[in-house]
Length: 73
Image 1 (cartoon, rainbow, N blue to C red):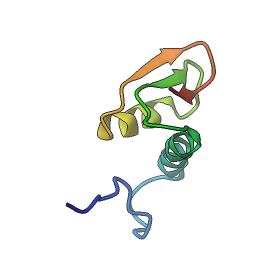
Image 2 (image 1 turned 90 degrees about the vertical axis):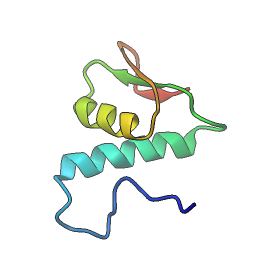
Image 3 (image 1 turned 60 degrees about the vertical axis):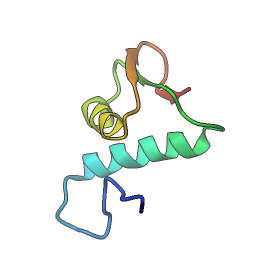
Image 4 (image 1 turned 180 degrees about the vertical axis):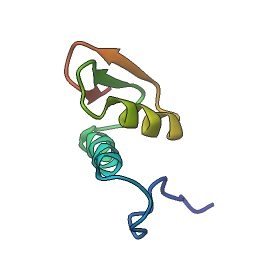
């Protein structure tokens, strides 16, 4: 089965820049994490919080809002 990306960056009309920024942030956190991510912690003041939560749900990655930094464990 082919892995289909949630966000097709080849399409220009898919969404706003904030959505792309949130998607990129989540993908960067996942790439920087060694191993398989099991939980995403999102800072309660994260500007892109709702978009990051949405992408995490799309990827079946559990998340929690925290006072700490946005990170993956």
